[in-house]
Image (cartoon, rainbow, N blue to C red):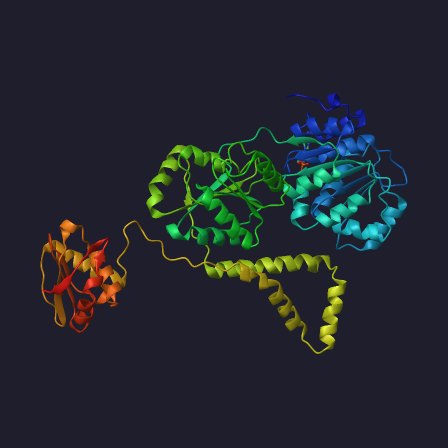
Length: 545
Ligand code: AMP
């Protein structure tokens, strides 16, 4: 689409500046956003750095600006000082012919200069949320006449914990302002913010959705069948999950899984065939609004799911066919954002993995589940990170007073801080790290205790039988023809006579008879229980051979 800036109805002065900068045509986002903003629409731009989004919102602001007014007319919120500076410089450059007065405000700089500039008069303020709020609270930044507010890199601002600050700032602007929101991703909290503060926004996303698996990192973990939950909950500890879909083949599995995740503090809900249309819609809405972070779904229930912001897809168990696999993981990695698809599989399921790889023509990477130590370390650093947010913000007056009191009572500041950490992490009790054992390959490796049994089997095959020292030989009145197996003999004898399975010696199963060696000192005990022995419904009697 070849379009010129003039066709977007931009002022000739602005177009000339752009031409001088070497911009010959608007980028796609500019073609969409500029006319919408000029028409007074609120907009949502899903775009990354490099798309030309800065000019997309700067140009309409500059076009509608009335330079020289007393009040701030436009406000731009950016997550970092670097971005605030970058945007203010771009604004100044694009608006040099307009004579725009731009000020960047961010933390770590003395207030005096910023306050002086504000007093002299500024048309556009670009700032980080914390500093903007401070200036509002100091009554030196008056936003009552602002006509346009831009939230740049909104997802970054939210992930830095600025949501309350952003809301407070927006509340300080007139309700009839125009609002533009730019974000690389549109997770639930961003949508919530947009729903609350934008009026009928026009949304622009980068191109059609890519449903291929190119943007998805695919990993798999080998596990034992009975340790799927342990593996999943461990992964939930270390993965940077924004929101996740967990797929389970069975309806039954979904409930159990969601419960476990909820107990562990992850807002999870089930999406399965048991839900009626209304409940399903409600669950999906909660997921979109980020009120729930995790959806545990069956394939059938997830059909036609239109969800954009999934960071992780977990295949708790593998789907029934490779096409379903692609369908499942296509829920992540949308809109140019990378996604992570994780599959749990047992050694027996390897062949199916190869089948999927052949279908997708992509390799899945085998990864190692996090160890207990790694999870602990992650928990520690997560806690410190949360603490750092408050340390940076420094708005803990009440808490500081509490610490002062404790220090006055003679407690050491380090000890107080350590105790505070201990207190916070008491919730970790809800999240025990489930044990994992070594992954058993298809054929169970003989563990120490079962070596004897393997040896026995060999001896049966060779048909040899011999009395070991200290052992007596007993005869059972059943054999191969009755379907008797070594495991039956060991199981029944050890259970009813209450002797250790390992103490049982050689076993030879013949057609109608079975010979078994037991330690001499246990023989009477075994014989005393002869009426009790059963294999299935069949009674077995034992006597000395
Ligand atoms: P942004 O996505 O706003 O960070 O912009 C990325 C880069 O593209 C910046 O260096 C801009 O100067 C440049 N740029 C923005 N719009 C255009 C355009 N229409 N033509 C050429 N370059 C542009």
